Length: 305
Image (cartoon, rainbow, N blue to C red; front, side, top):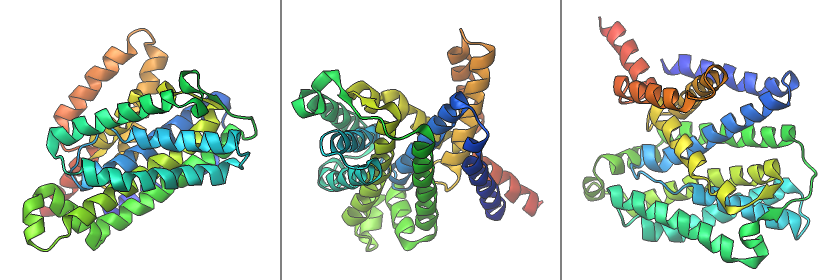
C-alpha cells in the first residue's frame, strides 16, 4: 500500500512539474491554487494531524510570510525568492514564542485561541502604516505565474518530504503520543513542550514560505486576501478528507476536492457550492477517517481474507 501510494505520488509530482509547459493561463492559475492549498494542508497536518492540536489559525503565518515578502520586495528591493524565504523564516521564528503561549490550551480552546490570534494579527497589520494599512501594498511586477508556481510546487514537495520523515521518525512517534494522550506521553519521558513547539514551528514555516509566493502571484496584497478564512478552511477540509495524520492524505484530499469542485462549477455554476457541500458531507460520513485510511483498511482486509 505505502509503495503504491509513493509511486502514485511520484507520478502526480512529475505531471505537476510538466503541466505548465502545456497549459494555458487559466489552467495554470487553477493548478497553482490547487498546489498552494495542498501545501497549506500539509503544514496544517503537522500540528493538527500528527500532534492533535486542531488549529483554525495557521493562515496567520501565511499572511506574515506574504507581508514580509511584500515589504522586502517593495521597500528594500530584494529579489522575491530570498524575500519569500525570509518571510517563511520570520513566520517560523514568530511561532516559537507564540507556541509557548498558545499550546498551553487544548481541544476547542486551542482552536478558538488560534482563530482569535489570526484575527488579531490581521487587525494589527491593518493598523501599521508601513504595510499600507487597510488599503494594501502594491508589489512591483517582475515574476510570472510559472516561476511562482514552481516555487510553490517546490515548497509543497518539501512539505511532503518533511511529512514522510515525521511519519517514520522518533519525533513523529512523540507527536502521535501527544495526540493520543499528552499526560501519559509526559510520564513516559516525552519532552512534550519541546515536541509540540517544534511541530508548531514547522507547521508555521510551510505557510510562511507559501505566503511569499502568493504575494508575488497577486502583486497586490491586503489583509483580507492573505489572511483568508476561505484558504484556511479549504486546506483543513483537504487534510481531513484525505486522512488526518497521514503522509498522502493532504495530497489525495486536495486533488479529489479540487477536481470535484471544478467539475461542479463548470456544470452547475449557480448552485455548485450547495451540491459540493452536500457531496463533501456525504464523503465525510462515508469515510469518517478519510480516503487514505479507508483505502489502507480495504487493502488490509484483502490481505487477511
